[in-house]
Image (cartoon, rainbow, N blue to C red; front, side, top):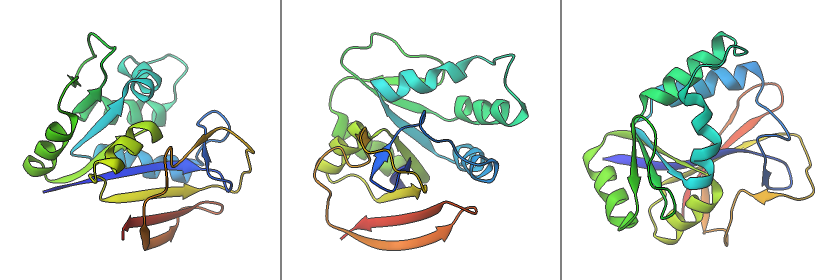
Length: 176
């Protein structure tokens, strides 16, 4: 049975913004390996559109960006959206019975399924489907933006903590 995991880089004041701060080379290496080992991913429309530029290689990318893109392309993706009419390679559009589809994936797959984006994570949390929350805590204060928890924070307990590099700690929480 697969585990549904929501994890993102987060500022000290609880916001996520991939444009405001970026992972160090050590943390980026971690993400390459993590993405390469996923059983799959679930995206909402907005986060899928942000990530989709990785469908095609870019001349300005270095070796690590190409490696991440290859890992991202290789994982099966489900895209939850009622507004999209089609999705790219290795992606399946989920328009209806989201809870049933996700429960089915969890039952049929082994390993981890990544939940991408706080809005989708809120929906998955409301359905009681997320098994673990991973906060990659950066020493940055943004003051505003998109919060990691898009809705009320569910009751959680700390499962593990790990120093990822000189500045980032990963906090793993499970539903209490």
